[in-house]
Structures are given as structure tokens and as C-alpha cells.
Length: 128
Image (cartoon, rainbow, N blue to C red; front, side, top):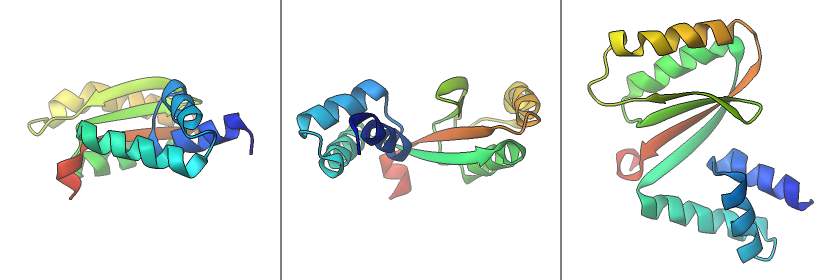
């Protein structure tokens, strides 16, 4: 597996940037598992955890609504081909009216039937 494939693996699993993934790999002399462990520990120390999900266009809106209903989310980032399309800040007091503009825009994007990546940022203590 070459370096770029390792970086892509790290990014898919932990939702970090290319730079963060590359630095961790360099620090671990190219060892993928060691780099994953280091970055995971850093995320826990920072107090946040990022889940990365792959969804199809038609599933996008339903998945976001489901995540918001769970209620233990700080931010949802919607990406397409590594390009960030939207960042949705989610707070405990968010109501439908506040989310309406985001959901309207996402409905249009979902109609395109592309593959999307959702990065769900949560506080580490919320998931324990």
C-alpha cells in the first residue's frame, strides 16, 4: 500500500485532514496502525470524536435528520469528493426553523444522486 492509500485510509476512518494524516504517518515511519492509534488518542484528548459515514444522495437527508434526532452531535460536515459542501452546527437548542435552510439546500444536492461523506463531530464524553 503506498503512502497516498494509507492517507486515504486514515482520512476515511478518522476524518482528519491530509496534513494530519501525513504527519502521523511520517511520525510512525509509514506504519498505518500506529498512525491511526496516535490520531485517535489526539482526538480523544481534544475532547471530540469524528464519525465518517458514506451515503448515497437519496439517503442524505434522512441520515442527517436521524443524526440530529440522536442529539449528541456538535457539527455535521457534508462532503462530496473531498470538497466540503456544507457545515451544519448542531446545538442542543436547535429547532426545525433554524435547520430549514440547511435541509432545503441539502435536498437539492441529494437530488443529484451522488455519493456523499458525512463527518459527524461529537464530544467524546457524550458517546461514553
